[in-house]
Amino acid sequence: DAKTTQPNSMESNEEEPVHLPCNHSTISGTDYIHWYRQLPSQGPEYVIHGLTSNVNNRMASLAIAEDRKSSTLILHRATLRDAAVYYCILRRGRGGADGLTFGKGTHLIIQP
Amino acid sequence: EPEVTQTPSHQVTQMGQEVILRCVPISNHLYFYWYRQILGQKVEFLVSFYNNEISEKSEIFDDQFSVERPDGSNFTLKIRSTKLEDSAMYFCASKPWAPGQLNSPLHFGNGTRLTVT
Image (cartoon, rainbow over all chains, first blue to last red):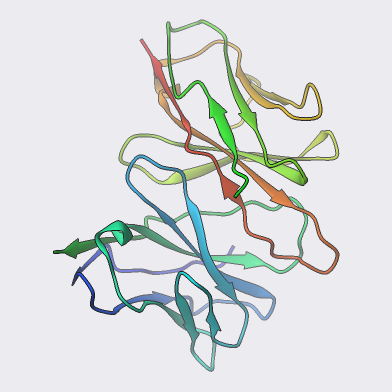
């Protein structure tokens, strides 16, 4: 699986936007970019995914660079409940039972 | 919203004992997974399961591990003879199948904390 690189940790203030970067310079044409997060003492939780175009859902937005070698997860207005580890994961677009390969992710700290 | 449920939330066992971790995936999902997370470390893939057989497994998933879907609702992970290093959080996940949707997200449970003493 292609590798992703994320900062170990980031800090932001409550009610401000947060931009979480991810580099994936070896991404292949069929790799989807997925984001999951893990709140303290919980299992991972799906946030958003995309292939080429930017994506929005009720949780976040995903901005994908034109060359697809990087992406940014955007939380528009962070709350204390958004404090979690955020994982950027590449996933082959082949479907089936393929699992996810988690890295260390970015530990997001939200200051009140 | 439907969710993946795991029982028990915490299991303590002695080294060498067999343990079974239980999961009830979301009812219309067809793909099932087990992951583990040793304290302070990454979430690691163990095994995926589809159509009543293992689809993929990692190097961690050796002969001491097995999975089963004994009925239409449960998905279990058995560790035959536990070792101290099996102490970890074990997460079950499931995924739906839908035509053309190659990248449906995985839905995770909140895990079982296994402590081997």
